[in-house]
Image 1 (tube, rainbow over the protein chains, first blue to last red):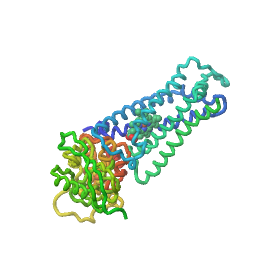
Image 2 (cartoon, rainbow over the protein chains, first blue to last red; image 1 turned 135 degrees about the vertical axis):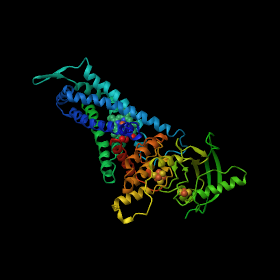
Image 3 (cartoon, chains in turn green, blue; image 1 turned 90 degrees about the vertical axis):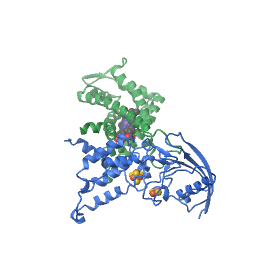
Image 4 (cartoon, chains in turn orange, yellow; image 1 turned 45 degrees about the horizontal axis):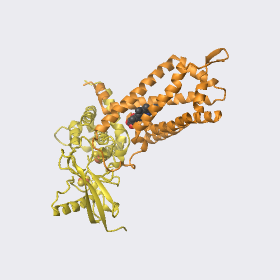
Length: 228
Length: 254
Ligand code: HEM
Ligand code: SF4
Ligand code: FES
């Protein structure tokens, strides 16, 4: 018997794929946040433009970015697979209301939260990633000796629309709830939920789930106010 | 002190056999003693039904003292009812209010088919045990107990895991109908002790494979199982099961 195929075909193997892809996305969020926060530096977008340009031309970052797409797709495919199997495991449901007392809201709604995130990602990629790559009306700007695309106004214009900004802020809340369960769940799946680490993982996960989405959400709020 | 006797409306799942579609039937009980256990309350209902010439409600029970794991009932949206760390037989009617409506359902999971009314077939758990939940011992004289030193913490952890009574509340409570808490308890009780070592890797691979094959769901770490387990089995055991399974899968076979 080949144990590795056994792993990949097992329920725990499917969970492992969710956890590994999820944790990669967690790491990606952190890096993404560090970049985005440069939008708040009051320099007319210079730091952000340079950052976007450097990222766009760094071969390593380009590989990571491709991997990121792959992992999002895998994460989604596995989440659909898991959800279907789990539905089949209980073909007839209960009449009694599902117990609120025994699990968190986040943990019971990972599929819905994830689907909302997916919808957000599509809007987000269309609005920024696609525009940055192909936008016809992106000007060039010169800093010192280098002339690079001026992508900052694309973001500034988007966030001057109150609905767009509000959509971002709300969706960051959704990401927060997804991470509130997802972060600690991934460590449990990897088998690291030892009694002595449980508290630490829980605390780190809660902090991450609050701070990272809050900082992401701060950007459209500040930029909307600046433009108003 | 509350009332000595309460009146109740019961919504009970009735299903003739595995093939029957099943439905809820509503019954009224007056004068239920608050000192009665939940099963005694069902006994009273059944006596009433027999007097009326109706078919009594089929339900599983044996020890009625919280150790056999038979009394599977999903009560008001909770496995074994509203009290945590309690089996149905140990649940008392003083936790319910006069005039309350109580919904009683069987465990719901594809691998636990309903046999009749509230009785489900939990032999899927036996199949998982048969796949690897044992240790092979040589016959002959019993070895000296003190000849095999076991660290206190390991012994305690193994003992806590071995407290699992196989009741299936974890599966019933899990939104994914996952059997991970049960399997993790059984894998842990052996993995922590020297006697379990020879079959350690084989055991976890076989038990998880059987669990998947039987159609239990995939754990998503909601923790509902731990909250409903009458024996307080911790999901730390699930982390251990994941570790055991991952390490066994990543070790090359023969
Ligand atoms: C920013 C993007 C995302 C991040 C950082 C992320 C992160 C995570 C993490 C860390 C987990 C826990 C894995 C585990 O339990 O072992 C998880 C679970 C899950 N994710 Fe995501 N995810 C993201 C996007 C999505 C998307 C787009 C979907 C899909 C439609 C999705 C659906 C799910 C589902 C259904 C689970 C539940 C599985 C479970 O609870 O075990 N996620 N996610
Ligand atoms: S782990 Fe707890 S809930 Fe699950 S079968 Fe064992 S005793 Fe019952
Ligand atoms: S009847 Fe034995 S545990 Fe309830």
